Amino acid sequence: MKLPRPLLLGHRGAPLAARENTLEAFRHALEAGLDGLELDLQFTRDGVLVVHHDFDLEGRPIAGLDWPQLRKAAPWIPRLEEVFALAQEFPEAWLNLELKSQPGPTDGREEALARALQGREQVWVSSFDPLALLRLHRLGVGAPLALLYSVPEMEALLPCLPVQGAHPHYALLDEERVGALKRQGLFVVAWTVNQAEVVGRLLAWGVDGVIGDRPDALRAGAREVLG
Image 1 (cartoon, helix red, strand yellow):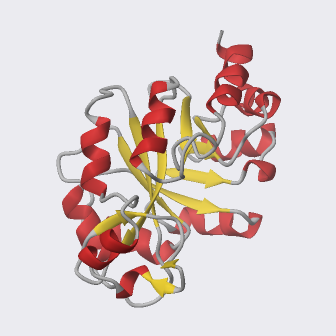
Image 2 (image 1 turned 90 degrees about the vertical axis):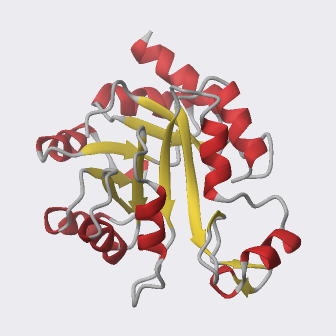
């Protein structure tokens, strides 16, 4: 995937302005002028994709709750469809959907996401789980895929996976590493960056996107490099 420009993405929206991974946080990020959102997807027992970072809610596994139970317990947690509806108000917005998954047998979350993404543009899927990425590829998901990682050994998996992107923690990157990943034909998005000077340095090295909590720091760092 070739991005139209280096993208500045709100990490779970704008979590310093509103509760993370909520419609309010997403609106804050987009109204602050960011190019898009990074958000986390979980899967309920009755097959609904919902936006929440942790695998549990107050000790109760999300995968063990039906959507009505989850909505009653945590009304701030949106469904993926609600995020899509919000994004329609910002036609230029991009979405990075992180599919939360744990290695092992599938519970159907990949199939549900593949269906939800049919006909969608300006969206891609990332995951720490290589099995989830393999399943999405085999399902013919139309969106690009990216491997998330926070330890350098994970890079050894990149040539083995049907991914178009690498999403390393920013501390793993330097100019040489960014260049090496780009020479593999991968788009590179770094997370989670909250210092303007680090944003600027990453963009100068050629990353395709930066994910952060602070829209002001993301924009300030980009101005230093992109004008």
